[in-house]
Image 1 (cartoon, rainbow, N blue to C red):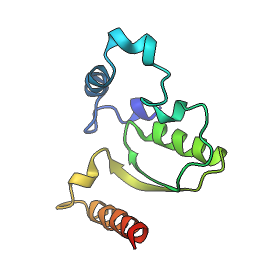
Image 2 (cartoon, helix red, strand yellow; image 1 turned 30 degrees about the vertical axis):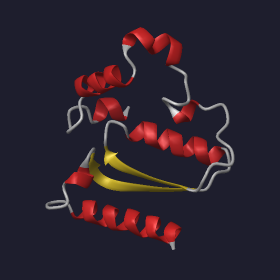
Image 3 (tube, one colour; image 1 turned 90 degrees about the horizontal axis):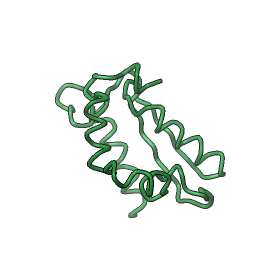
Image 4 (cartoon, helix red, strand yellow; image 1 turned 90 degrees about the vertical axis):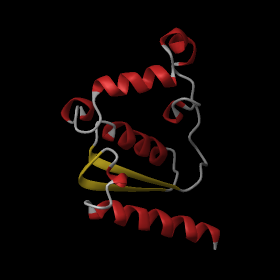
Length: 118
């Protein structure tokens, strides 16, 4: 539903189709469509994965896919921290000059990464 609801807000169905064609050309779709290396959510085993931080923008056409992946990780007893930025759009991380949530997210990711390196 998010692909329809938020179509054209930064990311459109037409643009996503372009990316998909570059990522997995039609001639190879049948062979690789269910390959977990292209779509980790399709892995046969999602158990014992590293702690995961998943950040989603609420108004992103890809929101539902991200939320589904988080639920699959949780269903397989992985530790998942899911953060949803309400009202935000795809790619808002690049808009720190006008969207304060972008700076908040960058600081959050920096904090989490630094905690792993300490």
